Length: 256
Length: 356
Image 1: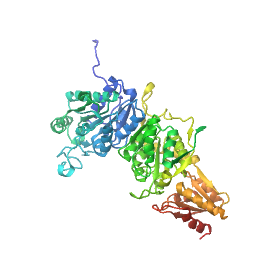
Image 2: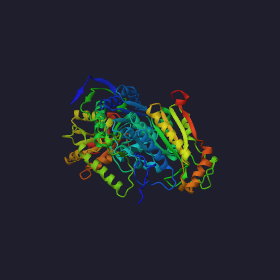
Image 3: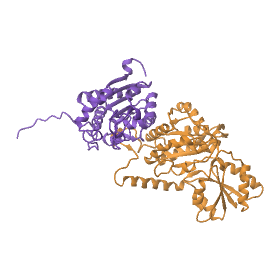
Image 4: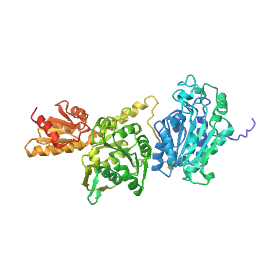
């Protein structure tokens, strides 16, 4: 027997609960959850966090993060989070919403929470499809993308064009930080974590509303392998949804 | 025990806002709609002065969901609106009932259906007492008849909401909201403004287990269990009913009416009593739970009943259910869109009294 000198170099963040998730193979929700969990650990936030979950695949985030949570009706997470934050302004509050939830049924709530400059963060997972319900067209579905409700592909003259949320949010007065990252490769994942951290910091400094969009893969509903899904993000989604910081009031030197 | 202060002359809407502040309401979420605008307008400054917060929401839907969020933290919070706006709030009310989040919702009703008018109506009785949103639930509903009672019941609404972990609806109307009357405000003592200590989401401090407030129950048997638990709670409210009885003791005919119509009917009762006619008034104050025992006790004394509502007949169902094994009730509708007067009610009451 030789003595093994093992060193653990990659572990589960403490804020992420040790249990199997319900996500499909290749789904990027797990990566987004992990990034948030890492930040909650690194910024020592877990005990002070109130999470507002939304409707869709990510509703079960409350089973995976070790934080207090309340479940919002479909699309209403920013309104619920407004109530949470206004009643407990000392807490760290964030929502986690998919594209159908945030950019369709919840469009009014996200726009006005952002415009009021609510001191909260919104993590927006954009995978261009309604996942939980089986792959229907979302407001972010790409032109030509086949879904169960656009069997011939999304047609701009009939269904409109995919909505670029980060650009819209960045244009609103109360927003301190708005950025779009992607979860399709290590470099983009690292950048996404930086964006999330900045958004979190803006809330902790009481500066304003923080918004981070994460382009994510849904291999099941895209009918692709996980690798093909990663390639699709790079080749189809990023050109239409360019990555980067769209608003950062600290760099602009002004208040929002 | 309570501290009382000087008499003031205020609208019903303002009385509700003042009652909420006396009950230590800390968050108000509103949206403009007639005839309740005095409530958010008053609150927009008064609740800030009281150390709370006010948000004019982007919609009724959002206001109710903000209320859901505040209630989940255990902080005393409320919203107010009028009929069409209350319909929009039903989504959040159902979620709050399902996930046992306390909240106070005020409905100063107007005429319907649709845009209707901005005058008084009792067209929202079904919505207020049957669980107005989707799913199978109930919530407490309190129906004040005077401005003082609006103040008093608002304070009670907060206690019930946070003790019972339920939305509580205060059901007034345009008459009550816009009418000015003298009231004596009072401040309740010993308010438990930390009623959520055992369930609210307030941070996983002191190393406690995380808390989750939700209405999604997918595991086998879980939703049935939750519904059973909710039903047990609703059953436990049966002892919390309240009704005003006026001249009922020797009455041959009992008029059943609530809110503003109850008050107008009371004027008619007074007039008939002066003429020696044995008419009395039964005015439910809790519409859910409905005071069926009290009503049944009157039926057992052989009395006759006339239900008068400012709608096409909604509470009449609850009256009939309460007395169904003994007798029935006549019904007189005041159509929404018309303002009822005591004179208008005299003929149907007289007809009923004389058995016509």
